[in-house]
Length: 175
Ligand SMILES: O=P(O)(O)OC[C@H]1O[C@H](OP(=O)(O)OP(=O)(O)O)[C@H](O)[C@@H]1O
Ligand SMILES: Nc1nc2[nH]cnc2c(=O)[nH]1
Ligand SMILES: [Mg+2]
Image (cartoon, rainbow, N blue to C red; front, top):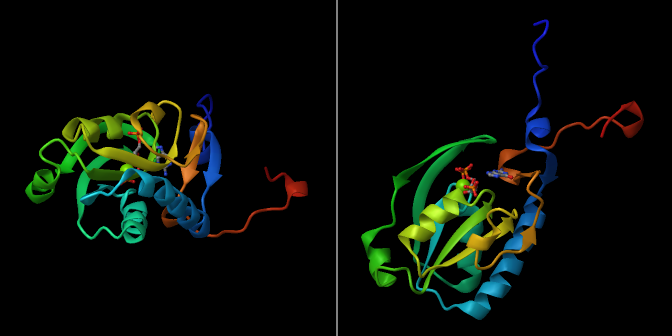
């Protein structure tokens, strides 16, 4: 409509795109596990769903941990963050394994951005070790171990959220 700002694409709203392939993600998860192997052993892995499920599976496999729990949190509608909702907490069994404070437990997520999700889970398990594959500067202080830092204005595109598609040649104006 005349006078209205043009609709922005998801990429324009979210700044620089940082696409991650399955191969790259697997390599980064393995690199994360090398670091975690120095810190453990861990009694259990807790994945922050949904994004934490994929790295948690790879990390748990590499570390030989078979007790895996989830803490289910929803906040983003694509790239817009709303209020955080805890849809499922940590199970009683796993809480007991961590002595009630999370000692010896490993929390895994794909990334920290503002740090709000990580802060909420850390408050549930203050003594747990918190690992993410990627970290943006605002959330970084909350994470104990991560692999790659990306700038705050970057949007990470994960392989489970994307598909291969045609990209126009540079000479036709492609970025
Ligand atoms: O540091 P923050 O600003 O809180 O953002 C980080 C969280 O955002 C994403 O999850 P999302 O809420 O999009 O849900 P999903 O994992 O189900 O995709 C990501 O997987 C982290 O859990
Ligand atoms: N996929 C994705 N989800 C996010 N949630 C918060 N930040 C991000 C991001 O950069 N990428
Ligand atoms: Mg998530």
